[in-house]
Amino acid sequence: MVSSIARHMRVLALGLMLGALPLAPAAAQDAAPIEASAQKLKPGGFVWQPERATSGPVEIVISLGSQRAFVYCGDTLIGVSTISSGKKGHESPIGRFQILQKRQLHRSNRYNDAPMPFMQRLNWHGVALHGGHIPGYPASHGCIRLPTKFAQKLFQVTELGGFVFVADEEIESAEAALKLARANASAPMSADRTPAGASRTAP
Picture 1 (tube, rainbow, N blue to C red):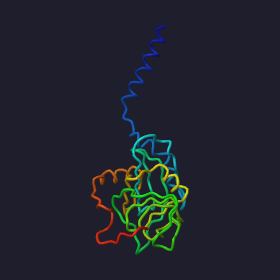
Picture 2: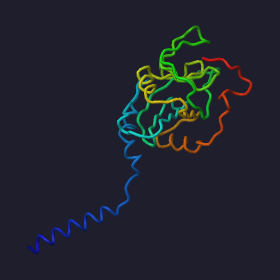
Picture 3: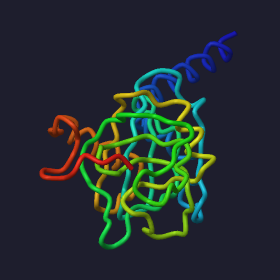
Picture 4: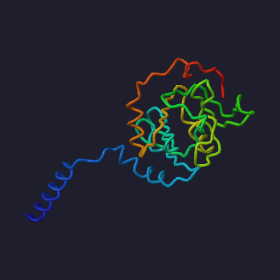
């Protein structure tokens, strides 16, 4: 009886000691498996796990330097994808945008009727997220291309007005991407998200 009580007390003490230890942030713990998979992505590859979060706004962070897109639901990472942004002379704009228009089937008004499946417009000057070829380097005319299957999945969870943050620099982790977006959450956007003096021509 005495030994049983002693064992119980030791287990209780161990539990209290473990409970006092600091825990890693939940977001960092949650992101670890998906980030590990994301680091191995080849051009055209993506990771998509929307079941990891059930509530919160969907936000997208684009790293032009890393050629990666990070997708969050609330503060939880739910997807990472390779991208292809604007090539030299047609660089994708950086800054804070909102999704202005969504079209599942769209063709470019500027570039020879080129298909832009699952298009999500970021400004009225020819820039959008859409499905397309991902060669492993910037190759578009300013749009941010996504693997078509990923573009379709993303299209299904975003809403008009959803925020997209585009950064020029390389971003080493999903946690760093989210911190960068949060730090710029109050960055101004022009009324129509169009660069000063630019023509209002749809992509």
